[in-house]
Each structure stands twice: as structure tokens, then as C-alpha cells.
Length: 285
Image (cartoon, rainbow, N blue to C red; front, side):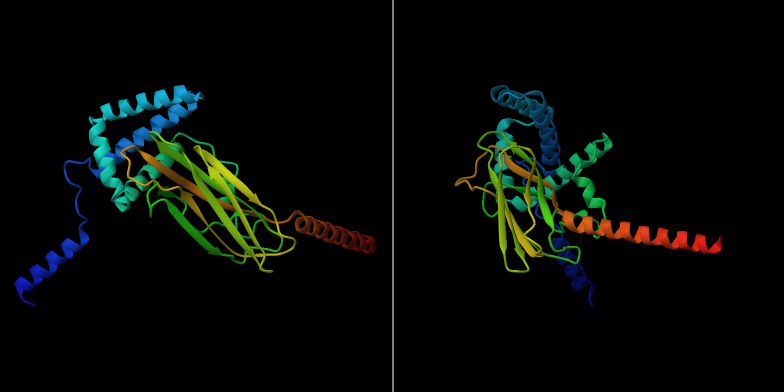
């Protein structure tokens, strides 16, 4: 291969591997990441310190202004940059994945206690209670299609048993400057007798939301699917409106009757072994 041709091939490879840069008039990705991280922390502080709706909204405005001042960004610069990223949501999604990772790492460094339900994710698939979720754990939604919805689908594996019940859990954060916080989550389960059970719940505030799916007789789940959805807005707004989904879980719990039967069986086996041991001792005497 001639030298000019080699240079052309290398140049083409570099062009394909490089992402288009953000125009200099907008806040750059790393700076936007730092700003959103600080804003998220500020909003969390507001939620903890202000239970009243009016005082909370007032302090959110003050905190946001303080974050902009810290980063040397005007409200106009932020608004135009936000509109730019909204129209390029794939890049915005990358930014917020980094924000979520930093928030999780920060919580661990501060010694945040492990949630009562999150401990199930560490158990074996053969355990009575375990997190069987195998889909994406986090996502960022905004009220503009197609970025206002995520869908999921999962086939049941060998850990699913007859008579299992479930708890569907979502940890979510609304990052809103203004507007109504509203979203919906839905999960639909199909059983081995073709019974279909649909459960849904609304998301209107930051926190942990969950719904229980009781067992359907002695039947086994074949598969499940569902979605998380934000109602779309007609026009892109310069106000920050994001829904961050984190730590999605589907906790599977075996039915109590089966566990009781196994417990009785273990007791009988244990008693039988004790009788055999006592018999052997009697013969030796």
C-alpha cells in the first residue's frame, strides 16, 4: 500500500472515531456535568431542609442561582446550552450517566447505609428472596419523544418458581426547575397458564417507589415486560426537566407455603436422624 493511501486510511479512521465537538458558544460536556452534579446536590439539600412547597421552590431558585455563579455561567447561557443538549439527547445521556456514577460513588464514600431491599441483589439466584432484574439499572428521561420513555422485556429463568410473588422497585429523582413532575411506571407479567397481570404506579416526587405483584395461585411467571414513561411536551423548554431512574429492582419472593413444607421436611429428616443415632447407641450398650 502506498504512503498517501495509508495516510488517507488513517485519516478516515480518525474521523470515524471522533465525535463532533460541541460549539464553543455552549457549555462544554465536562462543565455541564460538573454543573448538573452540583445542582443535583443543591436540590437534594433543599428537599431535606424544606418541607413546605413554597419555601422549597424559593430555595431551589436561590440554590440554582448559586450553582450558576459558582461555575461562572449566566442563566441565559445555561438555557441556550440546555436547549442544545435537549436536541442531542444521546450526548446528554452520556453526561448524566457520569453524574449518576459520581452521585453513587459519593454516597458510598460517605457511608450511606444499604437499603433494606437493595441487599437482595447480593443473594444467590437460588435464594428465597432475590433481585432477578437483568435489564438496565439506570436511565435518564426528558419530556420530549423519543427520550420520554424506556421499555423493558425479560424472559423468566430457572430461578422463577411456581407461586412466586414480586416487588417492582424504582429509585427516581426529578431534576426540575419548574413544571409538574409526573411519570408512570408499568409492569406486565405473563404466567404459564396465559394469565396476564398488569400493575402500574405514578411517579410524582423524588424517592423510592414500589409496587407488589402477588402470586397467581401456584403458577409460574413465563416473562414480563413494561415501561417507564413521561408525558411529552409539545415544545422544548429552556427549563431543566429531567427524570433520573436509578437502581431498578424486581424482588422475587418464594411462597411461604413452600418454605413451610421444606421446613417441616427438614424437621422430619432431622428427627429421623436423631432416632437412628439413639438406636445405634442403644445397640452399643
